[in-house]
Image 1: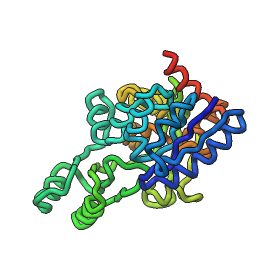
Image 2: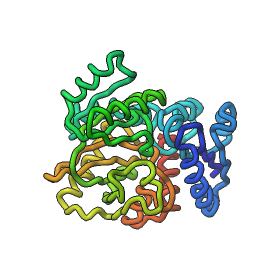
Image 3: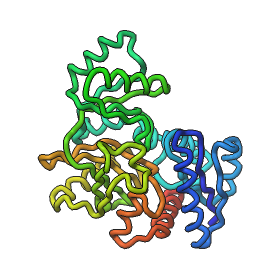
Length: 308
């Protein structure tokens, strides 16, 4: 097939996208596909003409554009098949608070949270209101970013104010969540199957951007040694979250498994990392799928959607 491999873009996760795409390009070529590598930031206006000549597109973008549904919307309009969620599902998943609202409405456990789309006029009043709703420690994060960029753990009002200032100065919407004590677990969905979860044990206080991409930033154990019952709960929640957001082909949901064994969903990634050692490929390997087979499976699912 003629594959348009879309990567790069202009989000803070640009370099991660490009690095992962090089590995995808390699396995696609090894499997006999013709690949056009397209960096979105070097010619956005050429996307449509390239896509019209492709049998399918493989999107390896992180953040916005990419996970926000923009590229998916364009490809959909010209009937170029692509792997993963459509524009609506992508947008809902990237907007963490919108996804959180859907999860709560459908009975999925979520952490207590407060959404701030902009800097409040009265900062002191806003801080007091947050403290009335949430207990320390809290996590302050970008509402529509990824890779744990702009993620802060705060334990008092001064740290909370500083974290909010950092986010708002960067032009971000903010989600503040009460910390849940427990284990960090992630679980992928491929096709209609929930994959074996992974236990993530950060070497630092929490799993931020630095630790996520450092070679020794965290210990990842697959399958997660959390017991049969907890594994089943996490997998069921990953599948339900995937369905609630209207996703397709694949996704990866992140959880905190509380000390009492209750899983709480944090967020869902519609374009999870795709290197041979990324989380979803690690999980797929546990059920017998090598990295190249995962990429091929995603292309088959993309083509199937076009036929339907």
